Image (tube, rainbow, N blue to C red; front, side, top):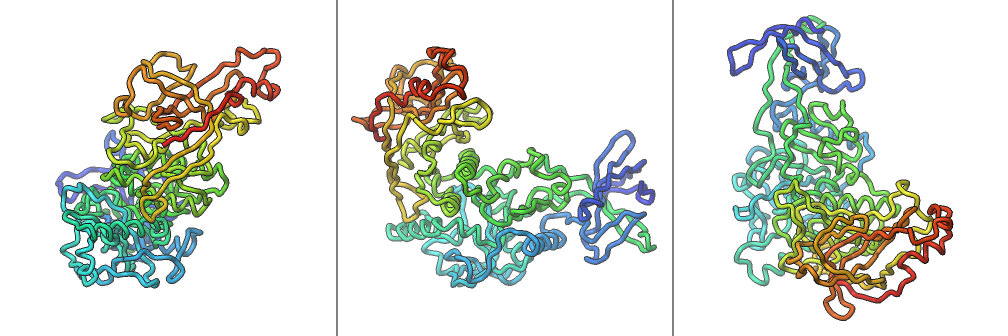
Length: 611
């Protein structure tokens, strides 16, 4: 109990007073000395969880105790996310990471820089300017933001404005989100800022053929090194609340707080503030979390400073915290309600072994395909930075969202309709070619991409020959890039394989899922299919259970002699009842020859091409 704090206090904008009848403390300071003190207030018959913290104008080294409870200088919080207290706290988090964490650190001259940066030195409404880097412009900060409705005016660099921007960009010409990003940089003593729309040439209405060619080349060059741009940054500013370039970064609604005059244990007067505890479980889903381009901006940087609805949140490769300290009390990995939880795996360094790489890429694509793109043609370019990162870790040939070294697994993707979406349906083929039909990037969908797992370890008894005698042999796979960026847009692609083809027919749904399940890529009419049409199942992998063999298959439509297009995915299950139960008791003690006799691998294969 803190008797001196049990006193009336009033809101600044109201006359009524509330009597605090009792005050019960839960004190975590022994374990987390820098977090705010948390209490439960009992007001009449209601209970409220509150924080008590220092005033944001308190002297930095002015620590004190009240009735034995320690209030360090760090035990304070800004009323808005653009307060001096907030910027000071962010600077401390950055310094702590650079000094004490094993997070990646880069230095001038030792890293590859983007072609252009914004020089933001100055103060107030001083202008900024665009510069071409020479190798020493470091450290720099990146901005992750939402562009907004493309039909509205957007502030960007084009072939016609680039020279003028290198002279200066007037402060009042900058949209609010960019102004706020400059303010953060200046408060954090960083002189250079990277913003995609200003540091990469952008398309515009009325562009000429020559200007378009220069713009496309510039975009391809910069996008091909996007991974390094974010990974070499000092940190990235995440404008979580931004809905467009004009919405700004900082929270506009200050949290109500109440001042309490106290006497410290050494007899001095001081002020404490009380406010309702922030519950990050109720964080609004930020606009950035729905956009395709921003996924790599969340995963790749060594450090991200989030400007949220209630406070700032700091996330680096070693640490996750927020200004109010809730994340410190509740480790994020044990609380799956928070939006950082699901993507946390992808932000950590990739394990170099095959299983680790496949799992990491699957997580990335699953999250990416649930996000939206303003321009559908950005489907592959917006993932380019993460593909570059994966390639540097493991190598391999990139194939329009899939990888050659894990192709038999990567091909087993599918979509399921989700009734929670406004437009639950299946995928749609874009009007313009974007990727071969066997790539998930060939579809626009409202739901995330999933993979059929043909060998979940430890769940079912399986033969040790799971990786052998598979029903498909991939002979050749290739994609032709459309630009100089090998991880960007593609012009064409094909896949050649030897496989057993099983003829089938599109028919109405029926309740025999024990046989298998068909998951079309699109509504039938959108893929040129109708009930009764002939298709082919091409088994890619099999999964041997104790009483059955399960296959993951591509569903193919014949286009020409030995030329096919993917139209879906299915699973097929064959029961082993035809086998002698005395000879085949379990998958562990069964002679391999018995299993081989039952699999499709002994059947005739044909060589086909899928485009």
